[in-house]
Image 1 (cartoon, rainbow, N blue to C red):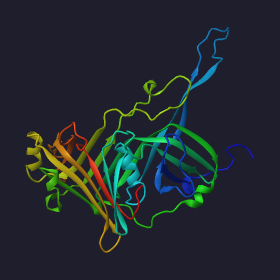
Image 2 (cartoon, one colour; image 1 turned 30 degrees about the horizontal axis):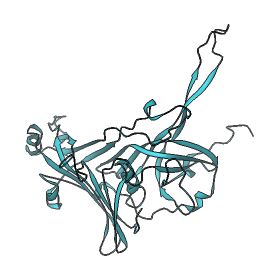
Image 3 (cartoon, one colour; image 1 turned 30 degrees about the vertical axis):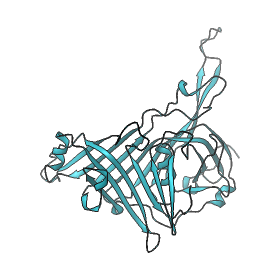
Length: 346
């Protein structure tokens, strides 16, 4: 049978992951595995190859070497309260997580960390079945960029750009039979609420504002060039250094008063929050996700007139800043609390 003889599709592909105890050591087993249902997976292995320019009679190149190995890529899916969201947000924000057990539920509080030894979920292993025969293992995964977005009439989506230490390939393995998928739906725009007020403490349901879409992005600016590498190895020996964390947040909102414009021109300090309420866990608890940015400024806010039949809308972008004393461990620019049906510390 010649290579490329059979046409495989992506329909039977799958993805799973697990937080690593040791950076770069594959962490998934048949009993230690988390499933995530993606819509696309673009993890790729590449080499920095070079044709050597030498003087050797011929005009053509005659020698080739492989240099750095680069393993990175993206995965996209829907924001789900029980699958992926907890671990992805924790890693993207620097690895810091605390847990509080509830009856039939759990509260997972995620705040900004620095990928330090005292933090958790510092790196992730991914397993990807591409088609129905080949399995790929990706180790030392650190999320460089995470984006959550939603719009009216759509599910809430999440996308990750991940930098790995290494990868390998094998035939389809037994991890497929260990996958367990949630029967609950992901979050949709119907589940979401946007809140804005002067301070974090006043962000309650009474200060909700109507919006048509939002986009939240967390960028770790990981260093992946020679500053993260060393002689003697094609791959990273340690987790790539994290540069300045940048949080970007923007919304689209109908323009009906001068309130948001005044916040823009006056650079008014405020606090913003995204709240999602999904399916119930019990009579007492729901699957909730709260994302809080305690210190924001409107940096855009004017509105264009697109035409007589167009609804007036403003695209408002926020500068997301650290709240409180910069020198204290409790100061942060963003924090998340996820309540779901996971009843043990992750």
